Image (cartoon, rainbow over the protein chains, first blue to last red):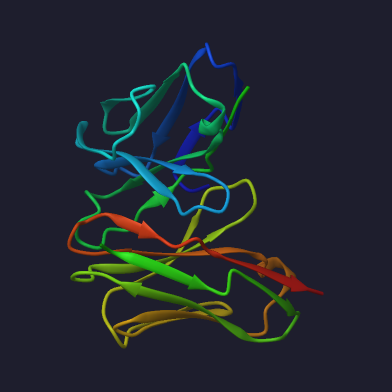
Length: 115
Length: 109
């Protein structure tokens, strides 16, 4: 139990579907993140939210749309994805933005397969 | 640009055979170096944070050390349950956390 919970753990979707990934953190942190992990590649930062405000968007395609309604919840809305978007999507949180050596804690991830 | 290189990519050990994993980095203004363990199909699990050269941290059979150019994760008398991918990440002046590709460790009984 890491204090960061992601649902669903596995998702298969067609290229024309719309789905969402959900993340909830129980650590009282102020910053939340979405990372993408593909085979044989380093973790890639997608989005950063600090106190519910998006502070970074790492040139992510618009078919990925994040939403942070409060400091405990983070969503990643998915629509018209491509097969190459299949990956493990990781949610994470830290006490504050990862700017002063703050440790980032990860959830278990959501495995996404686009068919 | 901050960079992290981990070696080896994969390492096979016999139970009880001690070894070290390497994380070489280039960063502008190190704010922290992080080690994570990742089991197949799961998210990374935090192990250590190191902030300055010369710092060392230990947890059970793991010991992490840091110099100005690299960090080592020493594994003493490993057990099969230590098998996992170990990830290294650095955070510099850009505030971004940059990860390496990881070292996949297999410990055979």
